[in-house]
Image 1 (cartoon, rainbow, N blue to C red):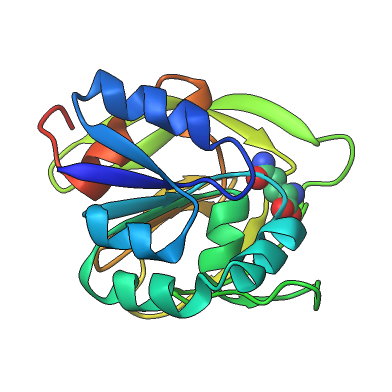
Image 2: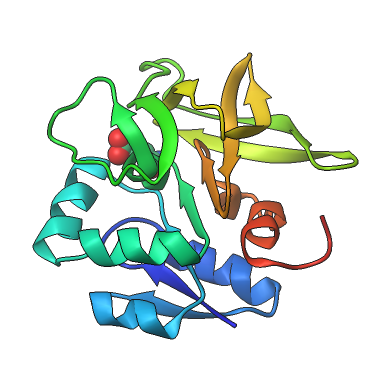
Length: 190
Ligand code: GLN
């Protein structure tokens, strides 16, 4: 199995390190045809205004949508913004609408620009506490009926799953948290 890291912009390299800890090979994805080589995709954190433009300029939109019909995608932070059905506050970003969630960008304001805290993640038959780093995080404002909440922070959903896909408002790759990569792409230590 090989997992693609969408390498247009953002912190894709750190996800490569997490996947190598899990013994999973990765490929930096810079051209749409490369999606044929991989069985899952990470859309990393970064700057969603830039990522949105690059997805269209590089002709990734339709290939990512087709990929999402059959293969898992893990989106973190700006990656989650790109996966959302609707973005409340920024018309510059053309989201992919892969997950039935609505989000607001940079929702935690200046004082809470960036913070680290523990989160409890609800798994099928147990809970797990992880450390989460939030950096200019989006807020999930609403979720559709097919979306499952894996974790909340102050009553806001911050980790969600819909079918094959997982979206996170924080950065698990900055705290060596492998849980979501395992949940998205397989593995056994969750
Ligand atoms: N605030 C950024 C955006 O809107 C996301 C930040 C991040 O990915 N850490 O794109």
